[in-house]
Image 1 (cartoon, rainbow, N blue to C red):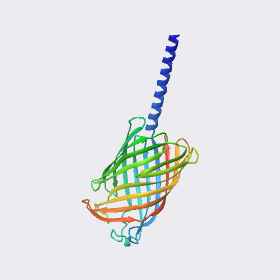
Image 2: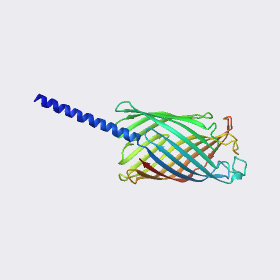
Image 3: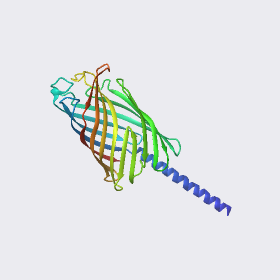
Image 4: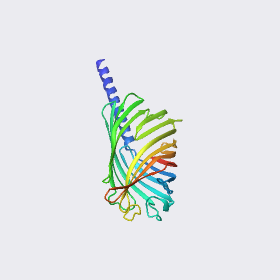
Length: 293
């Protein structure tokens, strides 16, 4: 009888061990599973500072990533109006026609225990008008998350964008409610991101939010704004839209955008600040399609 019990205990321990291995394998597979996404956005014409000049912006981005890291290319196309009235440039030429960005990042997750989780994301990028020289920067985003219970958690950390011209560092603080759930209501309150969503059904998510972003762009050697200079762009962007799972592989997203505030800071080739402008609020749209391998 004792041998039978011992044998059953051994078999049960093997089954549990195999189940744990399968769960770990499933988690690892989800982490390394690659996805490709294409995003296209447009912001309508908006006045520049107090001038009669204005600009509309179209953006296209191609990205390949998974939970461990990724790489992306982004192109912005500028459509200027009232060039002769703009507070910068030569009064006749388009100040900027295209801007490009290449970015790579790696994510480093660390599970401390059942309540604490730490995530660090490191990135390198080049953002430029025409020439790559002196266009490189780096970023770090690191925070700790404390799980209060199944539905509630808090996050605390910091993020920084480094560029030889200017470096920005800000705190990360947020509260999350059901952030990883795929049914019902979910919420993130904090900075640099605030978000709320509601799953209408298991395939469709209705969402709204706000996010802050910052980048430094290298201007060309023939720029009419500031030859071989730089532009620092700071954006506060709001969105409202939905995401829909077309299948297990395809996801489609569509949003209405509102640029709450856009700051436009010009530096000369040595990194000295020259001028500071604000682009007026404007509306836009954003579409994204994602394919999961």
